[in-house]
Length: 452
Image (cartoon, rainbow, N blue to C red; front, side):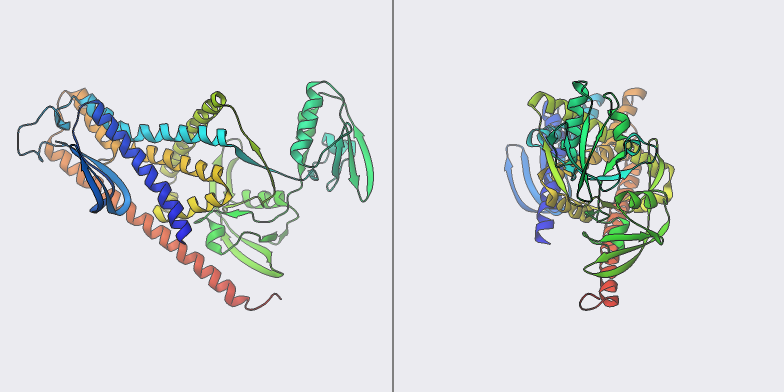
């Protein structure tokens, strides 16, 4: 628990500081006085005043803020000074509001670059044929599920990555591939013409056991009480032989309650799981329950600095696009809004879960949350950065600011919305924890004692 809170708290704290630092830098750039720089809200725990700015940590760790001098006319009991926020042109104020989200995006790029410099782990598998599609090139050659690939053109291979690399090398050199597989203790050879590598790999996949490798907190499998290491043996009474069977059955049933049977420590357990849906380009809407592949072999990909910068920036942009797509799904399918809201508890849980997988997974998730904060804060909601940008742009277009009365009314509506959203997020997070504990407790009551 302490580990989870510590890692999640560090991630959220850094992201808040990064966001507010963006506002801080933009304010300094336009010579606006910064009165307070706070991590958290409410009464101060620690703090120190340096120059005109009080830097502090506050008791409620659900965000942070930068307090600027003269943010509104109403708070001034004196004539506006040149260093007041309200004294600056509308476009200065818009850019100061944009500074926070922009810094979140820059930070995401920095994280992306770091990930590729440090090394990104990718899953690998033993060089054993899993699915071999009928009428595919591998099937026509005579390769069958369970065949263990021993060598490619005389070079030994032990993992699926090795197998891929050797075939790629032969393809580049236009050498006809020849492989040796082991089947029931016998070695069998197969060969084909160069130039067919895409056709070959479209018909064969590595063997992947139907074992749960990880579970996303708050997702259906988590809520149902499933655990890492559970071996799934059936979905809706349909036998499961490998991971591909799991994908086939679950993906085909979005927003549907399914029955899953799994083996755990010699016991057979049953779970009733309500899938969620996700739109995948080219595949349509699929069902998900929040589980991933079992732990297996891994390999690390590292790149040089310039290539890391390119790939980090591309990854950040791709995350922005995917986040807006996810937001659009919520807007167009309002019924999914409640389940889509995650609060600090869920973020802390997922952050710690990703940290257990390695530094790269941890940084990828923090990168995704940084992008999510950018997108959320740019929403045109009063009290958010997007609302301030909207007010400033209105002034730039109309030539006059929105009346103080209307601004106050909209600000109050925005505050009410944000508070309601925070309450919903906390209720969601708490409800999911309670549901998970209830599922685990019920499973323990139904299957007490040792294996049976």
